[in-house]
Image (cartoon, rainbow, N blue to C red; front, side):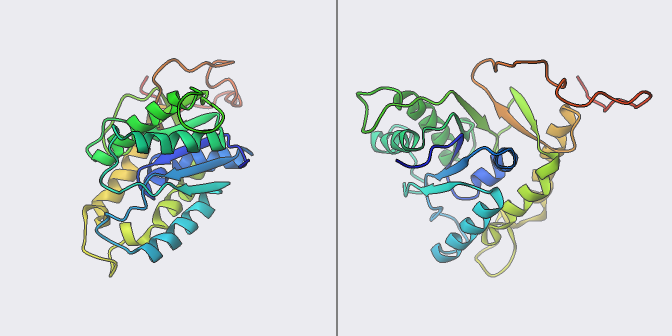
Length: 249
């Protein structure tokens, strides 16, 4: 049996997990949790790069994320149809193989059809993975499925403070040099423009600011998140006379 994972992130293409939930993966690995990524496609539909180069970039990014495993499902880029039974069963098999406690997926409303389809596929697969009559392998249903933000914003259920690992997250994204750096890897795209990086950082700063952190990573939860104590009580109390961190709420 494959090693089980605490957290498994599903990504439509290589680099999506780094962009959407890279901070959570790095933080969790630093805390001793086992984390992994399942890339639905190999990103072969991208305007830039080639398979050999993309493979090197995936390996470099995975090392920065400190992943226990990274699996490529080999589903067709640009055709991740959420209604495909074959695609859904492929995800069910991965969930049963690694038996994660937490599953992460892109939010199911997004301007990129593959991103939206992946969110819906994961939502269905996480449910069907717990039904013994569906597919092969021992049933397993993750304890939680949370959704990360790619293009389209949403009102977060919670925001993870990724300030301590922000630079590592940036390094993991930048490992995909062919996709995000202007050069000879192909035609220029919106992702190779300085405005894209300003957007990525500005959104992280904004979401961090909502919770009094330098950088934040937002997540959508379909239902309430159970806590064992009030948020913030696990942090050291402010010193006498210390000014509080600004929060808008």
